Image 1 (spheres, helix red, strand yellow):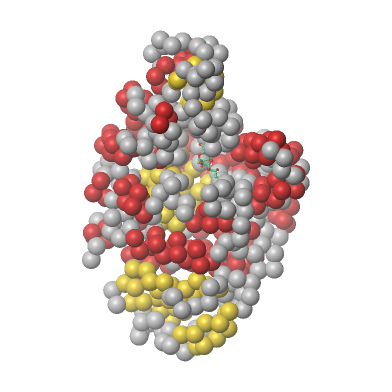
Image 2: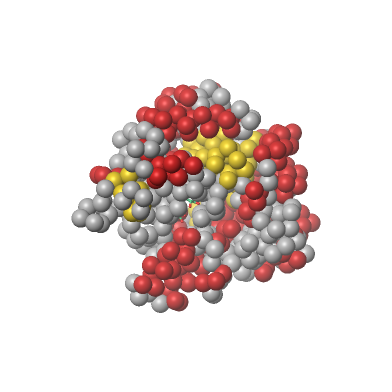
Length: 549
Ligand code: TEU
């Protein structure tokens, strides 16, 4: 028996739901979601069955990057409410058995943070070394490091004539983690939040904090893990909080460095290897290619088998940066419901902590835009400007943005079929997807066959079956490419998960009689030997053990 099992933590058995507050529920009529709105919807989340909410940033921010540019870590953004609302949210969630995971954005702050205002004011200001300042080379940038949002990562700053580093937008200057005072200020802030009774932290681009910009090292810098061990010791260590690092370039070996319990760093990582499978190798997320199911199987199998007892992974299709999965790798027209359920079953039967992004549980889809005026996201806007300048056509650019742009995930939550989907009584900050008349929570709750109830059942199954949490994984090799099938084995019991990842029928045969159907997106009874045709996007889970439980 593995030691993770014997030292199990609540976050290994949990399902987490991500709320993007700007787009979840507006209670004030200003068109922007808020904390009071989230509180109104806690009973809905309790009904779904989740154990924790990852709350995208709610701190004071000028919203250059929708809250990922923080100007005060200990104040709530006025549009979202007050600290009293935040405390009420923590409290009311806790009463429903739900923990609040805060988004920790400490690779950078806003340029409107008082630390940066001080820092840029003069070279001898005590806060100067809170950020990364360099002199230019021959009147130009210190080197050719690029920002994730395109263009140079260096910005010349007038008052002192030096450049500051910004790996994201110009309004997101990078903190200098080599400065112990920076680290201490961050730990103090984390303890401020821990003392409020939160359940943990999701750590934004934490893989970047050990950067050495002069050597053009950004991710996985040499001191990264020292910093995380120090952070653990000074803040959440020993408190059994959920800590999940956003780690874009992680391999299983790197994931173990973060999440091996013996190393006292984080609970788990978000790794993105599957997320890149529909982009052209070596290019950017905007350079599209079709997903190869074979590659998805390889990547998932690798992550399921290689961490062993020395690490813990998260499971996700979606977040606030990614397009809607049913539009991306499912089918958002004829087979929307079937494919959304298939994707849910495939992911939630794996080992790891599943994350559901708001609206995923009702099969919300991408929203197609045709005009630059419809774009809110800074990443898409900067890509648009960059590619126009490089001579790409409007058609090519919009194809990329409609497939991958971050606004796809950020359209308001669709609660019902009243105006603006019940999200706001005002003018929504980002347009609601017109399909809210058909796709909404009220409809989903009223239909016992809805995607919502598949998610609810998957969450319930995870609570009741240690096999899902601890069982080993085995890929079924002899299937057609489009069929993704795997076993989970635990203490003599075996479950088989079969998913048709295509809009075509597929053959599948099995030489053992299932004793029980665990969950499916069809009406079929699987308790017989079969050699059968799978319908488009058919998915089922059966118990192959001799006896039903
Ligand atoms: O994202 C990290 C990041 O690198 C993203 O910009 C990502 O590359 C891109 O969105 C993929 O499409 C985190 C946050 O999740 C994101 O919302 C922030 O914009 C970013 O950090 C900066 O804080």
